[in-house]
Length: 374
Image 1 (cartoon, rainbow, N blue to C red):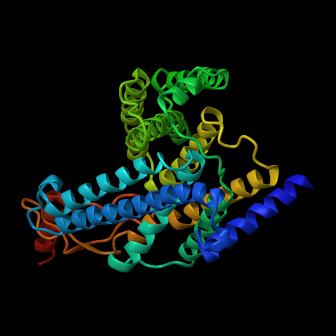
Image 2: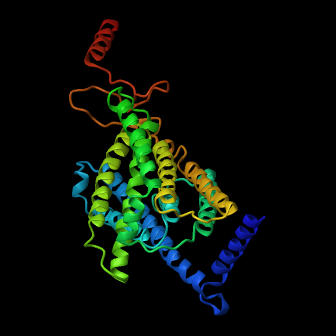
């Protein structure tokens, strides 16, 4: 009963805060001041993810333009592609800064905004089809985002170098790191030695590295924020240790994710990676930064229910999206030197190829047969 009443009180406070705004008369106070800082992190994360969605669609549009040219150039020579890359850097910077103002358990699940935002932009500007599953997925993602933002832990803590050192040598994190290293080495053994390249293995390796990434990102971002607002933390060795962990984990994370996208369809990789990444990041925030310490059970339950809704939304938005962009039944290949071919080639409906070109022997036989008939 106490947990239920605490969750209801928190829901009423959050609803009043969103409906009326902070700082209006009796609504101001320490609770709102603390949540205003978290709200700044949420806004930075959402804007960062939306900017990343725009950048991905700009790069996609540049690839489409270059593919339709008679003499296509490399993508890195396109100004439009570089504009998308610059926006990607801006979006990642916003995400990085968000970890300095809000907990990991609040920022990590907001990655669903990048997927839903990309779907909206592609419909509006790239003229892709808007499906019923897209609308349902966006609705679930927005509903889940609202729940997890309102029921994420509101425990505020300043991330200084001493705080990071204290958590870094804590027994909870040491046990977590040992288990993670054992799981990582086991999966890496099966991947490298046994040649197992299953998508779940690759993306689990990505998720295990991602947990170290979000821990180090929040530590570096938090210490930079603390240095700007209070005393500099850049003279402590823990800052550079976390910075090295952040860079190394990001590099290997991108390596395994690239292998997964090469072997499997992105419509499957994106939602599975989002679920595993978010789950790993939330667990890391709970264990390392103890972000759910003192939270009511019902509050935690509604938070994870919001995460589940956002996961379902991402799956619905990305489901079968690439299959809608298959070529038409008949494809004009133009003239190929040295080959006699039909104007249009029909793909084999039972296979993965687009049919075969008629070789010279077939054409010679057909011409000789015509002469005999004459």
